Length: 202
Ligand code: HEM
Ligand code: HEM
Image (tube, protein in one colour):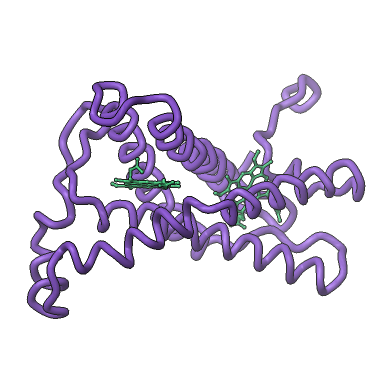
C-alpha cells in the first residue's frame, strides 16, 4: 500500500481522507436533522445536537483543506475505459461534491452568529468576533452581520439543506456500485482500504 496515488489506485492518504470526510459530512447532516426532528427548541439535547453539527461541520472544513492540498499535489488514478460522456459525468460529479464539501463548512461557519463548543473540548469563536469579519465585512464591504448572513444562510440552509446534495451523493454511490457490479472494473475497489492477504505477506 502506498501513501501517494498511483496510475491505477488511490493511495492510503487519499483513501483515509475520502472516508473520514464522507463519514463526517453525513454525521453533520444527521446531527442537524436529529435536532430538527427529534428535539424541542432550546432544550439541552437540542443544543447538544447543534454543537455536534457545528463540530462535525468544522472538522469537514479542516480535512477538506488538507484533501484539496493533497489532491492538487497528487493526481488521481487514470480514468477507467469508458465513453467521453461517462468521463465528463464522473468529473462533473466529483467537482460538485468538492464544491459542497468546501462551501457547506465555509457558509456554516461564516453565517452562524454563535461560537462552537468543539465536541465540548474547546470553544471556537464565531466569525462575527474575528478580525477578518471586521476588516472584510464591516470595513471593506460596509454591511452588518445581519445583512451579511442572509445570502450565506440561504446557501447553507436552502441549497445545501435541499434534496440536491443527497441526490448528488446517491448518484455518486450508485455510480460506484454500477462500476463494481455491472462494469466489473476496479473503480470502487481502488477507493477501498487495501487488505493484505496472507499470500502478500509471505
Ligand atoms: C459538512 C458541513 C456541513 C453541512 C453538510 C451542513 C448542513 C446543514 C443543514 C442541512 C442544515 C439545516 C438546513 C435546514 O433544513 O434548515 C444546517 C443548518 C445549520 N448549520 Fe450547517 N452544515 C455544515 C457545516 C456547518 C458549520 C461548520 C457550521 C458552523 C460552524 C454550521 C452551522 C449551522 C447552523 C447554525 C444551522 C442552523 C441550525 C438548524 O437549522 O438547526 N454548519 N447545516
Ligand atoms: C458510501 C458512500 C460512498 C462511496 C461508496 C464512495 C465511493 C467512491 C469511489 C469508489 C470513488 C473513486 C472514484 C474514481 O476512482 O473515479 C470516490 C471518489 C470520490 N468521492 Fe466518494 N464515496 C462515498 C461517499 C462520498 C461522499 C459522502 C462524498 C462527499 C461528500 C464523496 C466524495 C468523493 C469525491 C470528491 C471523489 C473524487 C476523489 C478525487 O479524485 O479526488 N464520496 N468515491
